[in-house]
Length: 133
Length: 278
Image 1 (tube, helix red, strand yellow):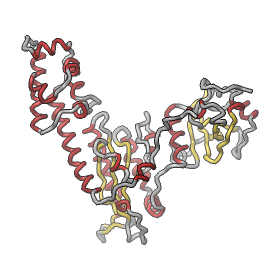
Image 2: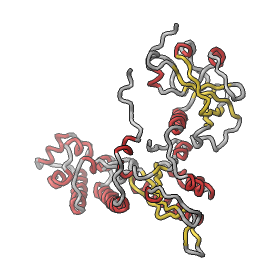
Image 3: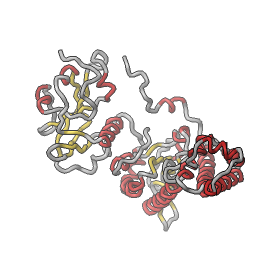
Image 4: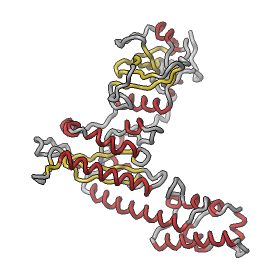
């Protein structure tokens, strides 16, 4: 439990929702109170996911933890729907790795270009915030 | 005088009843019967007439068979728009130059024709078509000509059409943003294409689909423009075609590119797919 909290730094609500239990139940687990075998296994799976995440050198943030991984679901949603956190994090790592590669290639390609002028920024559609009058 | 309020029943995409067309004296160069569709934005319609005195109406006519060249906002001047009707659904031909202004106090005497309506997705097509008249990407004419000559736009549409769920924007980088005048077929434009894939549902699946499309597009360009015997490109040299995550391309990066008008690919999908607004 402490590993999950240290690495993912999830909110109590996220954890409670992921395991479909009350927040109090999560506090109880943290305090070392008894846990069902099923939830113990799911926690262990979550802990393995945390290890993978840390090994990859990723830093937990709301942005990355809430990223869609598959079927429109993020890590917490996958776990809540009975999926494996470890498998989900493996996919998340693959997604992030690919994007790092793409970002590097794109940045290298555009590095020699001059910065877009302020005029270019102005030349985009904007919502009209003051419709009245 | 008819008073006008925000509760007016008129909205963008509403169709004027025949008696309104007659009473308002709306005439068109098009054959009868005339179809008149409200094109003003809902916010402008709701405004007080002292600020926005008119409602913009576009005149059109029924077409028995829609022309694929004018559906899905492909053409900036003419649109074949599907309308739902109590009797039988039909297409309406709208021409951009047939726009009329109708005083709110005049149109306010009538209610929209309840028997004809535009589906939300087709209203979206109408909006994009209206906006594109004033704002659309322009490539160099010669580049357009070379691309169109070989039927490339249709090939791209065929490849990308089924992928609307995954690829929702296509970016072209012509001559690395430089304005270069090309001198004949042996002086090819250089082109990079980035297919922006969605990470909203299944990033790995979308990347796979976009990568496959990128490979197919590369093959098409090579077939059309690469001269194997000479080992050189003619007309357009495709330097690269890649799949890029929507988490990777920043807004600033996108400003270096020109969007290829793939909107109609999304519009023709059912259900319509998300598209990136310009």
